[in-house]
Length: 287
Length: 182
Image 1: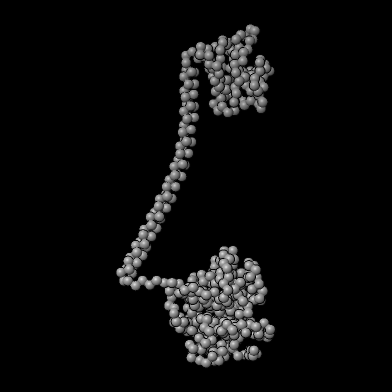
Image 2: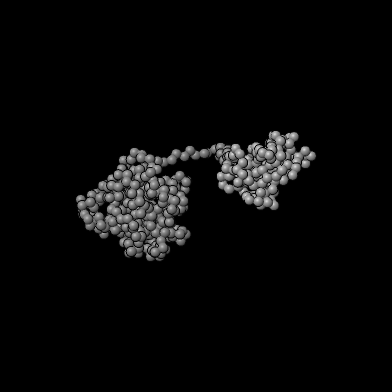
């Protein structure tokens, strides 16, 4: 084997792969034994690489990512034995007949037209679908609003009916207005609470707008007095939910005769008999 | 010259590739992707198509590394052949003009045209300058041997030169490139 001449140009041909296989192998072998040859081959390679790089446009970022991930996507096909994988020749069947060519062209045109039509249809459908979805949403919002409104209407109607009933009841000629005056101790003497009482129908409305809010854990209790001598009080119900009752009109069912009404402040839940120290108002029927 | 972020000997890279080590791909990319892309792009002239073929080329390198035999040539030479074959295959598939190799090349003229036409990857060096300084006969020999993959005898036949002249001309061409690019 003759010694390789560094400057002959054979190494340049070796790097480009331009030599016959036997010569490629022969030179590979010599290079593996000579650091000097190897260094020269690397210089040649570096020069060509630098030049080839100047021929390349920038590689896009997405492509770079694809290249770096090729190991994850690549199937591990069995390696080919040759130095370079031979490229299979694609078989092309020539279309010779003019008529067939025409048919082929027509088919392609039809296919393209059909694709274009499909695409337009698809787009149209998508837009319609979108519009439909929007309408659905709008409808849901409207339904929700409608529900809120009808709830409001229902409660307003109920309240209206109550008020109508209240008006009718206090206008009833049989309904007496009993004025309960403050006793001057717990409640100012010139303040009043009105009781609209209908003995026949056993109902009463207490208009307690003037009473102060009861302290925490206390409640107002209404008493019916069937006799003043001796004083005989009967429980006539609690003014429950005082804070929540905006109008402060309380509706009570009262059976039995009364000569007077009184309101005391009692512990929550009420008492068996009135706490006289906590008397707020008292008024005589017909007084 | 491009500064390499990750330097590695070809022997080490071959070992990593054969071990299916994912880091081999980064090293392959850093060290050789642009040069291989330069070759593929020079043959195809279309960025998107060339990128696709570069990916194909990487895939072939990754899948066929077992068939690489260092006794038959350098790793880079093997990759260069794959890059060229991949690009030439793509040309066939896209029914580019093929058949005679002589049809596909205008050697250095093509290189110069491409340098004028495309936004190339060099900002640190004027590629047009390099090619202008590279005597046309040297540009041509590099184009034939390295980019087009001509064998020594094919190049000699194409240029109507003795085999020995192809050899010495290749030597001078690479030396000139080295001096111009360093």
